[in-house]
Image 1 (cartoon, rainbow, N blue to C red):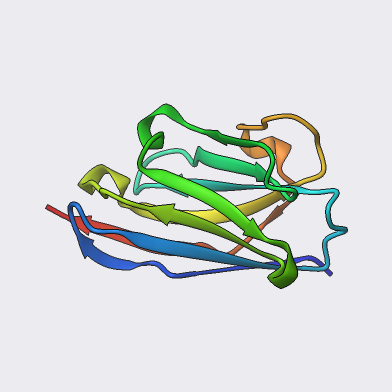
Image 2: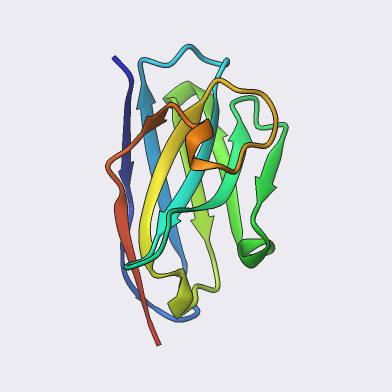
Length: 124
C-alpha cells in the first residue's frame, strides 16, 4: 500500500522560510518521480516542483524558481521542499504526489498517488 505523508507546514511571515517533508512508503523506488502541488482556496491545484528519486532532474514552476528547492533523501524515502522568501501568494495546502511516468510531469492527472496535504499560510 502506497502512503505519502506530508509535514512541516505552518504559519509564517512574508520573507520567512519553511521546509516541507513527504515520507513515502510502498513505492517501488527508484521507479517513481515525485512532485509538489499546491491548492489555494477557490483555485485549482497547481504544480510547484518535481524531482526524480535519483535527484538528478528537477523542474519548477516559474513563480517559485529561485526561491524553492526540492530534494530527496533515498535512505529515508523522503522528499523535501525548501521554501525561502515566502510570499502571501504562496499560501495554500501543499500536496506531495508520486508518478511512474517519465519526464517532467506538471498535470494533476499524471500523478498516481497523493498525500493528505499540509497547510502553509504566509502573512504579510
